[in-house]
Image: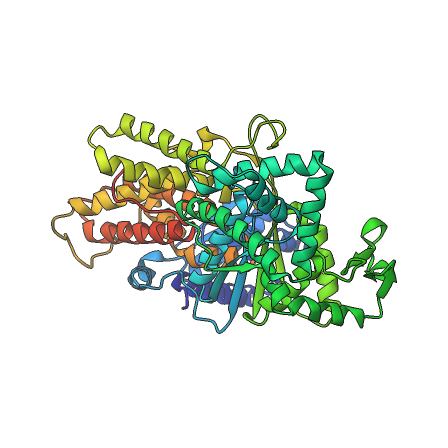
Length: 561
């Protein structure tokens, strides 16, 4: 879909270049998305060559362009010509474009993308420190889907290895008698099993024997450990569902053993010229790949010939690419080296490699999250607190919202506040989660954007008839112009957030749109106004874009707030 504004800018840019040529002036840089205006001509380069001040060059150029083109207005700021196009002539086409059902959406693409996200060890409840992973992964999936890609989401369940075996051991040796959500019950079994592992030689032997049995493909042991992981995962799924994150596929590490995929990887890696042996264990020597120190030796078998987690990770990615064209992994910053080693191993056996999107961790005002320091906050607790705080704020603002409506709205705002506040920060930047920011109804927050959507809904409900249908004002108020410009940016913001894997661009855009909409509402009456129809169209478009944008963030758009 061709954006009307982009087309108008491109045509005007060609005209300006032609006029510069007629003046026999040097070519000048033109900014197609300036802070002020619709195009900005940068006059500094010409000023040097023409031996004139930039402002003088800008004024001469502005005078010429206003005489020879249909430019509406030019403002000179230092050495910049900030150009405003003739929006009135464009408005019928812009309104038609804004009214299309697929405004902002990308064309359907014949490319299937598999996003692996969350993949937290199934040994206990999810905590807020890792909450960025499912929220980023789900948002990227929604962005890619909105942009026309075929998207699948997947949770890779580590149901092998020491932690999974410790959980299975703990469930067997310390049966839980508690109540409540299953992941909270069974994490107590895991904790007791961990204590046994650290303090009892017999327990350590039992757990390590169980690990070896699983790696060798013993069906009974694999079923036991897989079953323990699935029980905890039941509770984790409930938390993810409440957060609005539902991975479509759950792939289990143990399946790679039983399917023979791991043995195939071992055979392929054995044939690599980088393969070496040490005490019976096989590894790739990665010195020539620029890897030094303890990671120079990429072991892919133990001394007994059995596989390691890294081996199974290679097998898992080979499996992924049988099911997709492109794979995207959402990973914590502590997985960067692991990701690099995985890439080298896959390339060594001529396999495609995934893209990775790394994120820094969320911390609390008291410091980094730590189990030993007692600063772990479970995601469920975080969501409960967010909903409670949202409820209190609604009760202060709206005495008429009560009962079931209050509970439902509190849930939408509370969960939306968490998702928005986590996505609004660039993924590779760490930050402290603060309630006063997340639930601020006036600032860069989900409640602020959600309230703007509700305000648009309220305005539209008040319009009983249409005044001057199809009539467009001869002049646009500055607040109208800023709102239209912001609306027309939606497709390019979605494209940039998707292709550059920068989902934080979406909250920033929605906050700007909401702010400009509120200024428009302040300055430009809608109901029973002279240009009611035209302004109603702007309200409809704003509501639609806010709805779509919040949907991309996995946030509900309420009709009332």
